[in-house]
Structures are given as structure tokens and as C-alpha cells.
Length: 427
Image 1: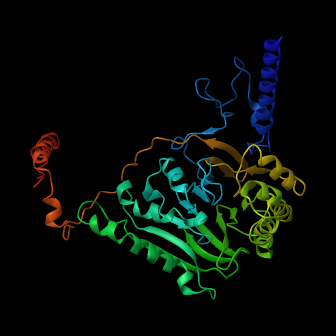
Image 2: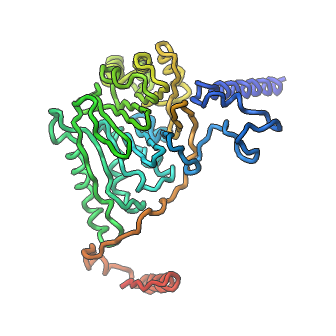
Image 3: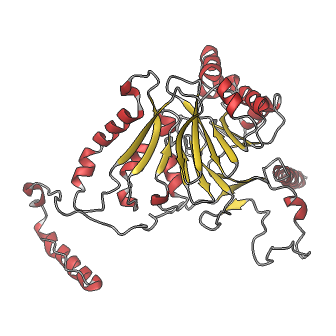
């Protein structure tokens, strides 16, 4: 009898899981293209036009990075960080990769933990040289120093271009230029000791500091792409972004509460990514905040879930994405309830590696399958090593080699030179 009960209980779980999956992939619920589910056929039936019976069905909600070329009028967005400043393996802090059909790629924010997600997509770093920062909190730019310094070892051959806030009456030492000057100084030992051994052209940053206080301020306009900023209500020197391309607009909030600039300029956009914190009660339970701390943080400098819903109700985007919260089985229902009490439009609740393909016809939502054992992608340019002024370790350090190991390493050099036709000397 106990065994029968276990079987029945297990069957109920399977049926429930299948129902939840099916609901999540219905049109609108998962952001899939209209009619996609209805076009699917059972095994053995006629395959829809254009589908190969030997290939995975397009209804499989999976994106394999590097296997799908974008159409010329298509945009792809990948969440490389959907979480919080509280570190966790499941979610990195704020970071979104935006890829356009014209070949351009942009990073919006690069919070702690996001660099590994970017690398796991297998995109050559020379294609990812444009980083835009909404503000300078660690959960929005904390991985930028590592992304910069690891460029040469991972085959980036060009300077990193960074746009970040400054001006607007804010202290100069708080601006992006000052912050990144300190980053370069922090890595002075590493950059100096690598001189003459690797291609160090990417050991530089081209920093553009924009005035965060300006409204509808164009900070980038190249190759048919325009990026604008509007002030955010978070703390001094914070903005939201609007990216315009091919007749579509993507809005990215950074950190903000509902404000009149977003209400005006993000109204009716094609794709709206906005922060959506936990509810105040969840912050008390999960973060250990006191009631005053929770209410203040989630209504004055961040948008709690209900405020996210209100912002979406005010602006009515074609598709919305809620990010910047711990998206778990026990938190998501409360967040969704708060949002849906105010807003009834299509919303995806972001997870790391969630992917959106965006066209004027609609949005398709899937999950990416990242490479968890990635190696550096090949260099896109010929490597140039400047040997005119190489770093040389102090003699007393190099003279510390163990004598019995020297013949062994010389044999390694001999074998290597024979294999590769080189003439490198150990000493």
C-alpha cells in the first residue's frame, strides 16, 4: 500500500511538472513566438514547413551559443547577471549582453560574477570591447577590473572602451574616469611584469565619461546604433539606458525607482529590462533586514516587485524583463503576485543565461546552454609582442632555479623547438 501511495504521489508530481512546463511555454508566458506551440506536431506527424525531421524542434527552448546567426534585423539579449550584490553561484550581479544583427555587441553593466558568464558564451573578446555602466556600484561594475586585466591572456587585441557616469555637479573623484584610473594603477605590477612576453595592446581603456544629469542624452552613435541616458533615482550619478537600432528600442533601468524620465522615454518600448527587487517582507525574511531597512531600501533607492509592476503598467512595453532579485522557487511566487497585482502584460523573470531574440514581430525567450569548461577563443588579430623594453626579473630571483631542474627544462626547450621549428633559448 505504501508503495502504491509513493507511485501515485510520484505520478502526480510528474503531471504537475509537465503542466507547469507546458504553461511556461505557452504564447506570452515564456515569450515564445506567436503560434509556435500550435505549430508543433506529435512524433511521426507531418513536420512543419522549413523544419528538418533530423534536427531538434524549434520548440525546444534552448540556445546553443555560437550556433545561430542573427538575422540582419534581429536583436539578441543574454542575461549574464540577473542577481544581487549578495554573492551566489546561481546568479551573478547585473550584466546584460546585447547583440545586434549588424554585428555590434554591447555590455550593459558588468557586476560581480558576470565575467565567467560572458566567457562561457564563447565570443571572441575583440567583439566585446564596448561596456556601458549605469553607475559604479560593485554589483554593476565589479567584474570590469578583472575583465580588463585578463584581456591579453584571453586574446583581446584592442583597448577596452568604457562609458560611465560623471559630471552633473558630482565630485570629480567619484566619476568613472577617476575610478578606472585607479583600476589601471591597481594593476600596474601585473601590466609592468608582462611587458615583452605577451601582446599587451589591450592593457588600456578608452573611457568616455558622460554627464549623468542630462535628459535624453545621446552618449553613443555609431553604425546605426544610438544609446541615450536618462537620470535614475537611485543615488547621485546613476542613469538608465535606451538603445535605439533598426526601428526598435531597448530600455535598461540600472537601479531606479519609478521616475518621470523613465515614464516618458521608456513608454511603449520593444524590450524593457527593469530592476524588480524582492518584496519588503521577503527582504526581512531572506536578508535579515529590519522592517525600516527593508521598506527604505525597496522603495527609496530600489524598485520592489510591486513598483516594477507599476512602472510596467505606466509604460506598457511590448515585452518586459524583471531582474535584480534572487529568483528561487520560494521567492518567485511572491514577486510574481506583487507584479501581477498591478500589471497584466508579458513579463519574464530573469535568470542567468536567459536569452531573448527580439524582432519587430515579437520576442522569443529561451535558456542558453553555456560551455562550463571553456577555453579562450582564438585571437582575431595577429599577435604583436613589443620586445623593445621587456621586463627582466632581478638576477638574484632567476639565479634561484634549482640546479637539478635546469637540464630538464632545457630538454623541454629542445623538444619544443624541434616540434615547432623555433629556436628559443632557456638561458
